[in-house]
Image 1 (cartoon, rainbow, N blue to C red):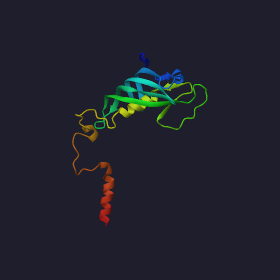
Image 2: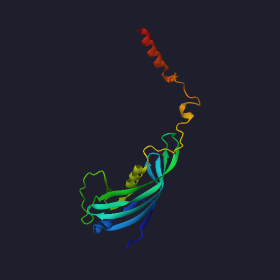
Image 3: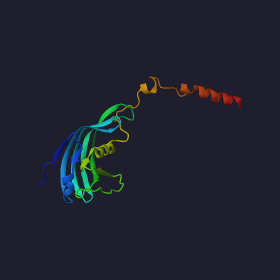
Image 4: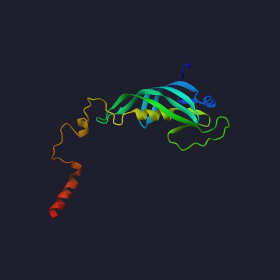
Length: 184
């Protein structure tokens, strides 16, 4: 019979020394709740909740589960910020840097898809959660189906530019082009 999951509130670090000492196939369950998690510069996820299962595998720990929350995004059409829900599945491997029984360093392959368990047998979920959340967010976020796109303030006023009107900043270059045509 499974025991109730342990809870982690506003923390992403687990000590997995005991799990690393156990046989392959042993499991631990955790419910993680984070008020916020920085994703990238100026972007954060809020109200993040994850249900995780840590399984002892031959060369470390496999973390599987699901994640959900909210993120503030910028609409690619109107450039306004809006809140969007996200959810996704988690599957990641963590490998120890120190052997739990000998205390000697473990030679890990340079595998970009594997996270490390630090020298104190602490498994930090933060980077894994950050990467999973970023992958669940839309590449081209749109605030809604009824988004009008750019408003007149981004086009320089209420009037639409005429077809003949060029960019006035390029008028000098246009004059040079006209002068070179006249010289021919």
